[in-house]
Length: 345
Image (cartoon, rainbow, N blue to C red; front, side, top):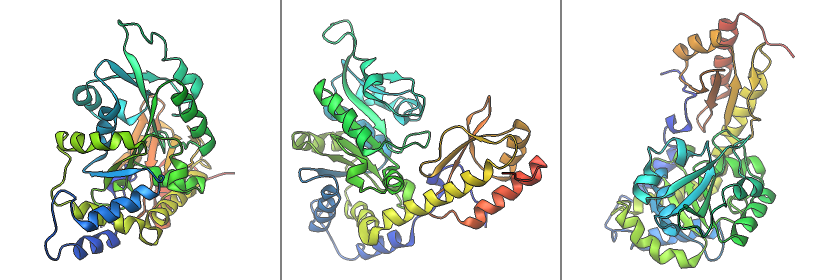
């Protein structure tokens, strides 16, 4: 056994129920490229979570889901308004710019979340042929710093976008965690979005990602964009099987609730050490904590985790469906040993 990683929810394995689902669809033949009845039925179940007109398109990974969503609504002279911390800006190796051919119009945010006022800052120059024209607002739910948009915040942002001729996209790689944290449905956690990158890889799936469009006018184009983007899986039933297991018996919700609960436990306990302070509130499955450099360096030799900000430093500690209370207790014991201080408060 290896020491539990707190580096990413991508580090977790695959939930056994997902393996079982993959085995079940492995018997016999099925039409390729999603033209089998099973894949169509699962896609409809996913779509129903996001509204009566929604349509779902399975893809291989989250970056592709984001880029295809951008391509669906943006032409090369148009831009995407997003937070500076957005995954599409910091962790997709320029894919939105290179493949979608658009400019990212970034905005500094205090907590990873965009607001109508922050979006409005990037609307200058509309109609000016010398300026990139904003066309899409992209937000992350859960955000990259672990915060969640409430349905009320989403409604306000969506209304503002649509009033100004903008589409709203949600990078939902951790949408399940947000819904669990908000005690909301997946649809409520994505309120008002025109396009949603709905992912499950960070929550127990093997390679389960999708693009959901709530505007029927976008659906026809999505078929061609998925193929052109090299994301059309010939044996699509194996993508569908993962989402089938994900939705069965609320696996998505149970996994997310557990991950969130482990993060809350870690968050509550780690700030009891002197010199440890949360950088942002722990709302889902990520804990962002300021810690002494003298502890961070040796701790990283025992446990894998990323430093979100190396200068302070701020550690990003991610929990997932396989994280146990014992894992948390072991990590806290290492902190106590390396800091030489007992927990207070």
